[in-house]
Length: 587
Image 1: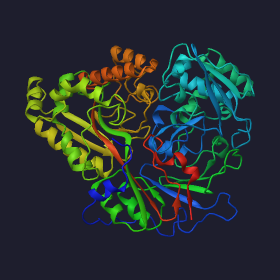
Image 2: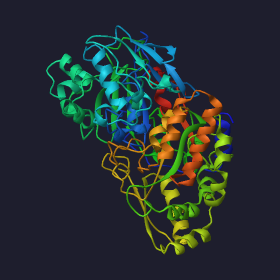
Image 3: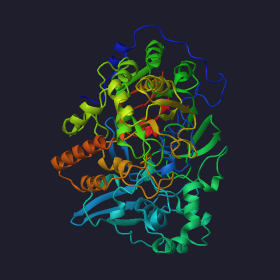
Image 4: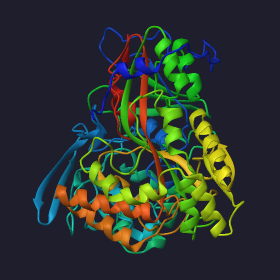
């Protein structure tokens, strides 16, 4: 299966007339993209505007509670690192503007890193040892996880870097093998290196040396205030934090923000690397179903909505618009709450719910009209085009046949056996058209089986105080935007330190299994591909046996952009379209 199908799939699927969507903003909105152009000088010029459905909520998307696509997309060009997921295949791409890295030994696994001598934060502070040590402290889980992280992903197995104030080089030495070592080092997204001098000051330290000493010590109380700021001080609540708190290490800085409407990036005057193409990039918050109209109106230049039949039809009917349909690593799923509620300690009820979920109908109604050859997703962590997919499906086939195919009568039998007919189930999700349609289908089928589904779509579902983070659900429906790395889904199933927004990483349902933890340890260590394939198959089989989540479908991606917009390169990984936003331009 090829990763990218071009417009032909969309043309085949988009038969019939387009619906007309209401405009999402006035045509004279100066944050939109109307007549900017690249200057003759060849330097950064003009504005490119990108529409995204979710609002920006945190300047630090490296914490567990802020690990969302929207936060990551805004910050991709603001916080830099040694690598990013890029290109048309979503593989790791070194960022030599930031620095270089080299594996120098396999036994023990040792990687040397050197930050560019010219690298500074946008306030002029050098990027050096204190940033390195803060990053390592967060990503290693030191101080019992006082600093929130999405997952440790191998850094917990490294020695603390031995560096002194001002140092630009460091070494990561692992005490055991780690297959995804390249993406374990400081990069973009949830593995980003944040400004330690800001955290130091907000944590009450009077000097860089004192902060480094505290990070190198073993007294968690010494960094308590710093950790509190790191975890919560960069949340966006109605207005931008003071400019002194949000320096950039990438080609752009965050320069303006209008709550729930837009975020503006402008060129970082201290950026030492290749100059970006556009003077500014504007992220406008626009509902998926309104984005095509906004593109046609010239209010935005690039859109990447969750595809529905209506949106596919509208894009095909639009004039002067380029588009591309591609497969993505992103996949939709249902997660059970193992911490509390009706499914927490009842495998039989989880199995009954799986039996009533109309997985085939969801794909038939919502996905095949966009990508006709789409299939129900049978496993979670392996994309159909990746090695080991067939093996993972085969290992789980027995359980899939028994509990993964809709059977309303069998679901009701289980409910009757458990004396649980009428059990209320809270189904939570982000409120958008496709998920409302999906939730409505699930409710109808599972109500017929004997559940009472309380479907609660919400605009704040992904917020720090929303239903997902706070475990106010029995079943949660959402998507993971991932990559080819096995370490990327380690924290999704690993036993959590505590079932809280800060402590559960990506394991939103707080599932726990010693057997799963051991399998995850093994798959992270092996660099032998056949062994990794076998371990991944075992992991998928256990996830079905324990009924941890229900995979639904692989997301198709639709990207569309206006006439004159250049260097738009869709990317199937978690970074999405913005991976090369510094190269976007508009003529």
